[in-house]
Length: 231
Ligand code: 5RP
Image (tube, rainbow, N blue to C red; front, side, top):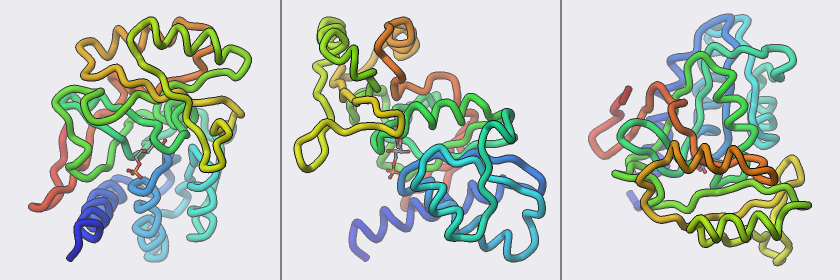
């Protein structure tokens, strides 16, 4: 088995464990990224066995919506279900207290909206995402309103973020579903993720950021010895 195979197998194992949390009649949010999408086939299998009657899924990203539709699962939106029983999502970096950095796939704003709408927010990841301190392994994505890009880049640099504008392969700035830009910020290990989140939340021009503080209640982390549930 190659390393890629084993990482994919770990993602699938974490996804399978989380799929068992979904029950009939629930409204369930699903985020974005390869691990979150790996939950879909397990949900489809359960739906095929008649275990998910009346369950509806609220995707945080177009790609997830496509995956759900392709699997024949019902897709809804937050107007239909403003309160979700559960949301499941991947992460880029997870701290021991389950705070995390998200947004590697650029869907951070909608992912956070879905996570905040959920009574229970659960992470799925391979053990390579675990970190002693957020910011050690992954830059922090900050979503920026294009009108405010130049002053916000200056602001992010002034608070130590060393921002890099995320670009598409053709060199143009990458745009999110809302048409915003993303600055990936290399703050380094964060001593106070909640303080930084508050600072970013207070700044006009910052449309969202990938610090998910105090949101996740549990995580399914898959490693070489199986899946561990952290809470
Ligand atoms: C997308 C995300 C993803 O959840 C995160 O990037 C993890 O992706 P993957 O499961 O593919 O490693 O935050 O915005």
